[in-house]
Image (cartoon, rainbow, N blue to C red; front, top):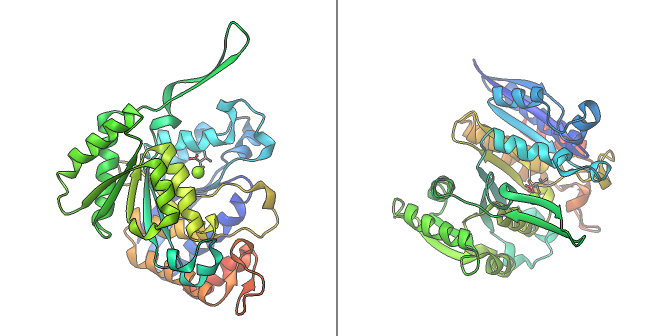
Length: 363
Ligand code: IPM
Ligand code: MG
């Protein structure tokens, strides 16, 4: 029997609620296959600050490093917002990404037919949207030095962050994106700001060079401001989008709203080795609805599907989860974020009810 170690890091806010449902899905898959998932739970983010005074302890990091994959809920919350940057919950997430070497962040956004009216965009614009943002995750503005805020002699303050990329960093994310595009419709759009930022001009040159090894993939380039506009104007023109860390953070939130709710988007963060992988919803800890049991667990459940596909080569099981999600949406189950009042055939359900419905569908 195959055995996989999964580190389970629920984190803060709605994290524990959504991860609980995703774990139920994982256990259901376990029962139906000849695979064992050994789950090790640990604290991360604000929860870890409260317990140990630090957002990421050596122990949690070592659990993550020893596992075959990490399942993460969300980190952060108003409670910890006053802390110094290096002590904030978000640092745990960034440190995990960095320490595990998770440079490639895959964020697929696809429209589920039953949710077409949950989007703020016109049905004809979003019907059939199926794209993937490949976000560089361990470089760029998030990690570049120098960084920080300093006091100037005149009493004013000066804040600095730096967008840095080296050729090898761009090459590996470009390869990851071309590989992803190859498995889809062989269309890749590289997003930069090459008309203004030298770093991203280098980005464009390197992506073009890497593209020579992928003659079967149609490569195009777009400035990030234009891409933000095109995503709401005509999202169907995109298949795979590859971009810098910060641009990818912003564009993937934008892409999520095409689908009606940020509560629907999963993600996979992958490193160079097979056992370097973390799966998490793209949304945050939503402190405003934490503890109310109304969060949407679908993004986390779909992240489990990505885990099965990318880390454990369990494509069939992954597809079954995706179908189960589609079916419960078809049957009218809606968490608050995707519920529209007065729509016949739909029913507003809690986080746990949504999880249970998906598990039932699977079983
Ligand atoms: C995301 C989040 C994180 C990021 C935050 C929580 C640090 O917004 O995963 O998109 O900015 O990367
Ligand atoms: Mg984000």
